[in-house]
Length: 147
Image (cartoon, rainbow, N blue to C red; front, side, top):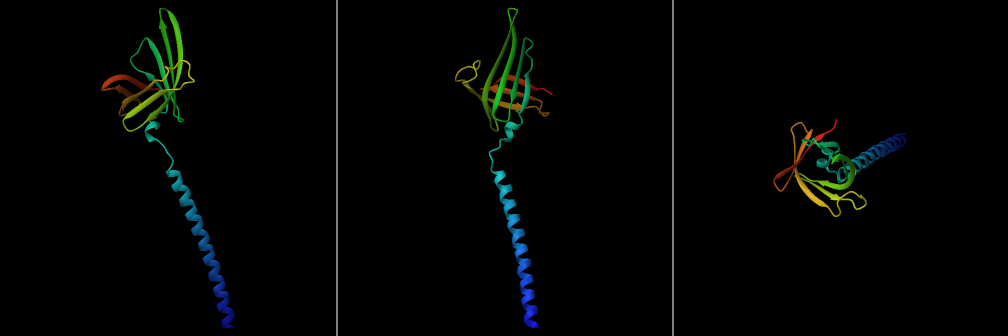
């Protein structure tokens, strides 16, 4: 009788250990999956630019910059020169770090300047709805977020 009870107790404890082992394996797998997601190359600085922006203080030009999550930006301009309306669209790749926004032309974009690559320092307003782009210390352009 004692032998039978000891065997049953051992079987139950082995079953409980297997359940605990299974739970630990599942927890470890979830931790690994969550940690691997943390190693993706995300750029939190670029996230500040995502969306459409218009140039500020240019009454004769209507210009917008739309930044996409895939690292491309579309520049649309509407100008009137000598009473002739001109529309143009150019596509660029962009990269952002803690201080600079870098643009480079996409070769398949017919209206983009060929082999264009330039970096601008940037500074956001406190409300994050305006960003000032500067080139070599000189203010180049102010963009306002389009709601």
